[in-house]
Length: 110
Image (cartoon, rainbow, N blue to C red; front, top):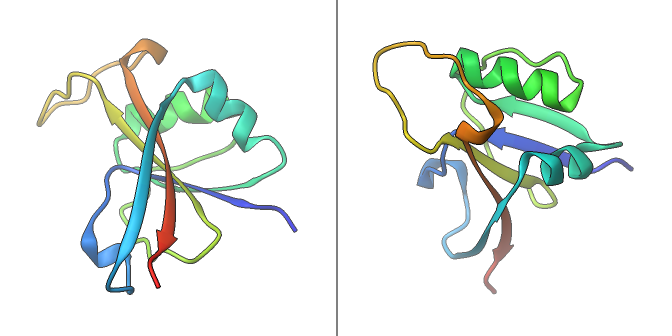
């Protein structure tokens, strides 16, 4: 079974139905994300159009901006995608060095 890589623009408490979680957060490069995505199902919840365009090209996937709400499920690999220096309220060209990427491992605390 292929693992799911879920690209999100941030982590919100509403994503998680569990009461207590442990989230490990590790910065990764675009190249590391590309390797992680090989052979995986990639689901996108990033809304920023220029960022999604860059991710589509870098990952060799046809991704679209997605304003939907993500609900975490055990086994998902969350990748938080942001801009190192976000510019609010306007579209900008995004280059690979502009991305801030973090791999999140989520564990339910028993």
